[in-house]
Length: 515
Image 1 (cartoon, helix red, strand yellow):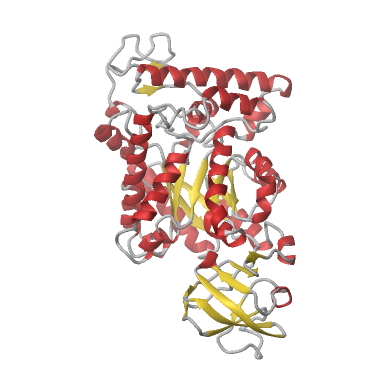
Image 2 (image 1 turned 180 degrees about the horizontal axis):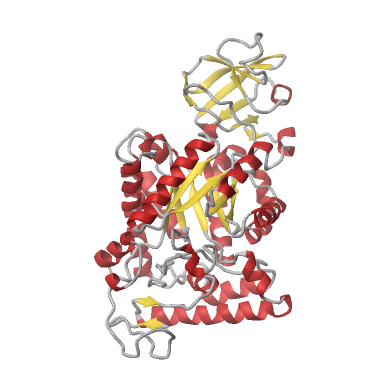
């Protein structure tokens, strides 16, 4: 049902609705108060669609700070298993759920796995690395090995000292610190700081040889470590909405995790594939099809490929996800300067704008919100920038008819599309789906699954007819989105049992909200 721009008319033939048409405003709809405020302020056709993922950390862990983040537009709260204990994460989840229930917000919870790539050990405090300073990396455990050099930083990879060579450059945290290997002595690697900075706990560690990234035996490390499986069990026990898998290399790990989750809980969380490993790029088509959503984690990705290739890879991932109807998140270093400064650089704002212009469904703040000095201001910047660029997109007709037309998107999914049904994430409280990224909350049961494309949908549709049924639904949604744009509709209402049809409709990015 499409609602005209002059009035919101309720279809007389629709079940459980009044027979008379009537004017409906934001206050008449059961939606989260933040969305109601945006609809009232900006109108139905100008409400922000790009979702905002915020990493929770010491800078925003209090209940007051979390609510302020929600009021500023946070749609998904991200918890990073690389930092904090299960007890701390449980407290954060409880606070978010308490605010959702008490205030009517609908913020989802996503947990990141750490991944088994090489990283530094847990440090009592960040280590300041000054240019020219000598720093030692070791595969020993400083707590138990008395022979460990004083101040040495332990790394998680036992063959690290064997794989690196004198003259290699060790890159920490995607380039936040770079060090030249000057000497190897048994399990210890002695380095000299080239590019100064802070070395943080559990920071990713890679190395380069003659300017090129090196993938040695560390490339054979499993995507999910023993610790990751413990973190996944914790996430399932907490009923998180999404699990983001770090350093995905192939689609197999996604299928394995989903199968495991479905065997453990009645409603499995969505699986987000993080593209941050060079090994994932050759398998990108299969990964996008297998995942429920994709994240372009540019920081770690930029440490494994040439830095100048990152923008092209980002655009390729975003466009591929759009063609497949999969939500895509752009993350890492969006507003890196706001870790310390209250105002971002104009180049950072342009980067955020470009991600929205490309069609990213969500933007993610990492250190800016978790450990930065200005988490609220950083969120305000990405929210305001996203809203402005979306308005520009609508003026230019780009949001719904950009790189992929409706017909092209349907054609792309017709041959070899994802076996999972549902093209986007929608709101669980009948809220606007925007361009695909989710919100969920205490009333998630209303759609039967907080996640369009859950296994129940696949199981309920015979494989023989599923393809034609999906295509029929997609064609209908494409036509509805096109008609809504042509008519200047204020909203589209869709009847859906599990959220799948709403997800399809979201895929085609109409200019108005979806309820």
